[in-house]
Image (cartoon, rainbow, N blue to C red):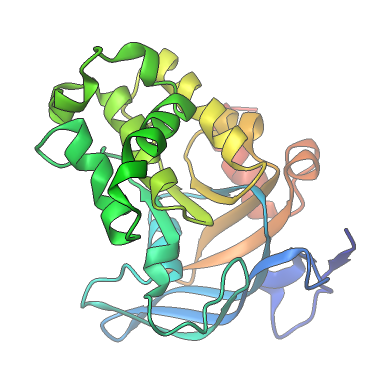
Length: 276
């Protein structure tokens, strides 16, 4: 893959350390340019330009209030009525010109708190399959494969389809949410601090799932854990607070980012998080 580094200029100092990777169309999954996000009339986040790969794990880091979660919402069009945006978001991981389906239908979102329905595991898993109009005779096979992929199949009862989803542990519910995303057949997974409330064992299981997802799909992972970002990500994006609003200040491979962060905001964030 070719890498091109954006040159610093007086008009856009924030972009000085944003590497414009994936300039070849076959490598680029999403391109964001001149993005501004507003809460009512106030600008809360700006992203001059960033390109994401078609596959791989991108860690999105930064202090609270820098717009990380809001960025995910705008990418997937899961915005509330108070949010609006302008700018260009080109998504090539799928055919975004197909007007029959909303863009959010191609994203799988995994929130900080597991989002499962108060019904059986079967009824949770059938939701994405029904939406995709998958033939019912294929449901069990696809469900069991998704549960196997997230490591749940061996932890459930023989009659797992009757188990109530909300009786699962927090970590199991989170993995069930990921299984629903797999059955949605999403090209892009968005994780918003998915392990912040989980124990180390559950966290390790989910990190392994994220790594595996990144081999075939694009994963955007918002995390406050530098250790997690270093363990699972291929690329790192740093957001910061600038003039009372969020802004992107750095994007590079995670290997380069953690070896030698280029922006002063990244260095300060790492120092505050690690004390080094």
